[in-house]
Length: 351
Image 1 (cartoon, rainbow, N blue to C red):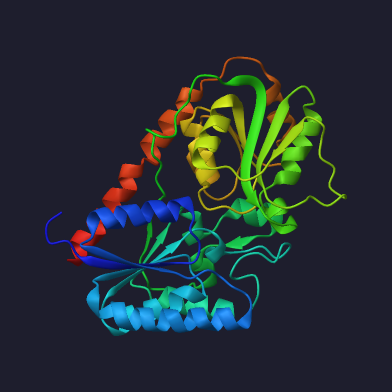
Image 2 (tube, rainbow, N blue to C red):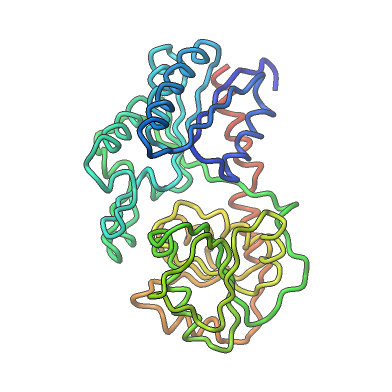
C-alpha cells in the first residue's frame, strides 16, 4: 500500500481477535502505536491508566491519521477525545459487552446508569466511525429481548446517534483452523473463558450441562474453565472439564469433536464458534446476536424455551451431517482477508 499512514490502537484486553487486528495494522501502516490498558478495579491503577491514556492521546494524536479503540469503555475516552480535537479519524470497534444490558446478570456497559455508561455514550458520539462485529450490536437483538429481557443495540441506547456504524465482522484463518480428520462420533464441545459464575451463566454452560444430562450416551467437553465450580453446580458424569487452551490445543479439540455447542445469552460474533466450524464441527447455537448468521443452514439454531426437544432429535439422529458445509460458510462469510481489506480501505481513504 503506497503512502502508508501512521495509526494508533488502544485496547483493554489482549484477545486473539485484537492480536489479529494488530497484525493487520502493522502490515498496512507505516507505524502502529499500541497502548494496552487493562481494566483494573483498584483506584490507584484505575486512575493511573486514565492518566496514561490522556498522555498517549496527547503525544501520539498529532503523529497519526487514525486512532482505533477496541471496545467501548474508560480506556477509549481520551484517545477518542484527542482524535476529535486534533481532527483525526477515531474508530471505535464494538464487540458485545459495549452494546448490551443484561439486567439479570448485571452485564454490559449499559446495565447500570453510572459514570461508565456516561463515558460509553460520549465515546460513541466522539468517534468518527463505529465498527460492530454483527448488526445486532447496532440495531438490537429481538430474540435476546424476548427470551431474557436483554436490551441491546447502540441505536437502542442512543436513538439519535449520528456517528456512522459499519458491520465489519472479525475474520478467521482457514489455513490454521482446519480439520485433521480424526473426528469422533457422539461428541460435543463448548469453549469459553470462564473465570466466574456470571460468565458461566452468560456463556450458557447451564444449557450445556442440561444437554449432557439429556444425552447420557454422548461425551461432552467444556474447555476454558479457570475457576472452581461451586458445589451447587452439578457436573454431569459424561462431561470432561478442561482449563484454558492455546490455539494449537483448541484446534486439536475442535478436530476431535462432532458437534460444537454455543448456548450464550449474550455474544457478538463468537470466535470459538467460527473456529470450530472451520474445523468442520456441526454447530448447535442459540438464536441470539451473531450466532444464527454465522451458522446459517449448516447446523441447528434453537430457542431453548421452545426448541429443546427438536435440538435433542437433531443431535441424536445418526444420519451423516456434513461438517464441510460449516467450514465453507465461514470461508465465504468471515474469511480473515475480508477484515484485512476493510482496514486497507479505511486507511486508504484516510491517507
